[in-house]
Image (tube, rainbow over all chains, first blue to last red; front, side):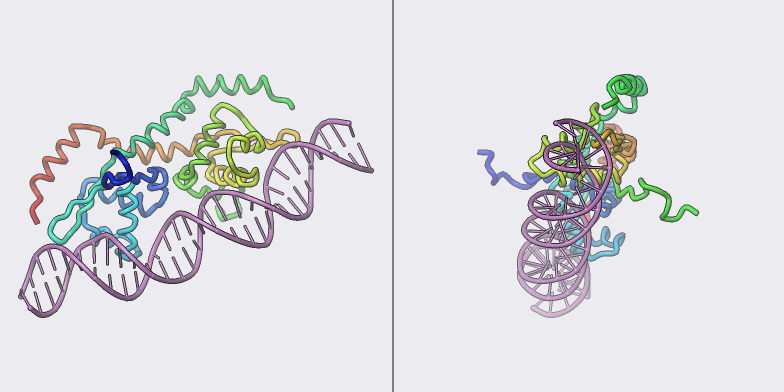
Length: 115
Length: 115
DNA sequence: TTGACATGAAACCAAAAGGTTTCGTATTAT
DNA sequence: ATAATACGAAACCTTTTGGTTTCATGTCAA
């Protein structure tokens, strides 16, 4: 069990990769509080519907959107959960916004310079 | 004034793009509290020094690392400030982790379904 | 039914990305 | 001086990425 035949959402090819494209970030934005079909989404971009469809596929693979069939439409909605990974990654660097640690770091550095 | 001749750090080709590559994320990690030269960094990856050098260049263009010449070495250090853009972008989706808003959203949706 | 709409799959293409090897140039060590 | 080290630039190659056009299928409307 638990082999490669599970279902969809098995791919998950990296949230970082998924959000690296500006078009895809805009798509997420558009879906923030609306569930929209591909054709409507396409209206916001200077590219073909098929291209948008492929971007949505990438977002879906990363778990960032889910689709729901409604009549002949396929409505996409935002699924923000995977963004938590990003959030966690970023949190690692939070200490850098902490001034006390920054000062300590600089202090240490000033001791071990000179080649 | 303010044309394309300013200086370096003018490129800034997107933090999202810069951190989309796992190697580059690892590089940032390695530089968290160390200032390191290219050769040392290369030891951590299964690729040539030149490849690592190119990754560092991309990070530098995004403002995520800065270099300092020390002898014949070129020591790289983390420059986390551009990560704030990511942080801001993510913050936009913070409301999704707020359960009250999530419930409200679902309530609204249940009213406007049926095609 | 018959036609229009909504959409993904497939085949294809050009450009960008991620690597490699080779070369030139500072800088340090002998 | 000479050799070794540290490194980026350039040229080149292969794979991935972002697009396009064409086609097949499912669904709704007349």
